[in-house]
Amino acid sequence: MRIVSLVGNRPQFVKAAPLCQALRAQGEEILVHSGQHYDPDLADLFFDELGIPAPDHALAVGPGSPLHQLNIMMERLEPVLADEKPDALLVYGDTTTTLAGALVAAKMGVPLAHVEAGLRSFDKRMPEEQNRVVTDHLSDVLLCPTQQAVDNLAAEGITKGVHLVGDVMYDASRMFAALAAGEPGPEARGLVPGEYLLVTIHRAAATDTPEALDEMVDVLTSLDQPAVFPVHPRTKAKLEAGNRWDELQNVPGLIMAPPAGYLDFTCLLMKAGAVVTDSGGVQKEAYFHGIPCVTLRDTTEWVETVEGGFNRLTGMDAAKVRGALADLSMPAERPQYYGDGHAADAIARAVVAEFGG
Image (cartoon, rainbow, N blue to C red; front, side, top):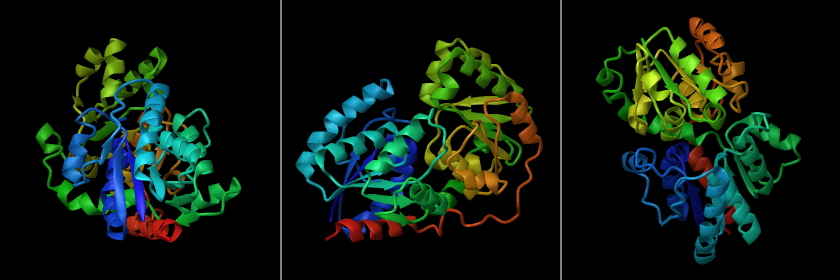
């Protein structure tokens, strides 16, 4: 079995850590890095600290709009697949990298496997929703993290090649939790464990217009407890361009920090009183570690966390965020929504069964 795996951003690097090991135990994996996250703080550090094998091919797409990145990725991925002649291409999640891989594989007749298939927020305005829906409908093997994802695919008429495997990000969480717990994390930033918020904001909907920046700043300036905000380079650039960066630097109790590595970030999350985020992956990571989550969106693909009472959707609304933070009660028991922590092995078995001959 010969598989090309395509990654390009931080969540995909995290998922690749356990899955590369599992795939390479079963056959040959060729790792391709699209370069969607090209900043060393968003890429090189993750490969180093998570022990991910060095990429066999780097597409080096670099900065640009999603359409620009998509075009460059497709142009550079095509000759890689032509040379490597894999049994299948494996893509992760719902990013521009994911969509590029799906489109190139479809046009070249290369079988496609999709990790995190079947997720739906049912908000077609989200680029991530567009990417995941198109990728699912082009995929030959659909590797679903939850039963809800399987049901979503069935509702769209997709039942062939569907496997319920669990969530590979839960594997990574289990693999690295002990290492992360030993990081200095909050203490190194002068924060008291359990008495601060961890904030992440990076989506285009929260950053790409003056009105969105106003709403983000309103939320950040309204937090009434210490908070650490590891700022994505894209978010920082938008704040600087909108002349809002200096304003946030002077908000009492708000630490505007550089991007954090996976272990440092996980330590900050594990020791936070709550998480405030617009990230899909961070919602899950908060759930894995039993930390209350407030999501700055009106919809989520991780519906289980909301329905179970572990996550609250507020949108980018300062008053709703404060209200959610005032009531952070959660159920004592956390159901196994995302499998048993061995999704990588289940994915590898499914890929071998489908493509191993």
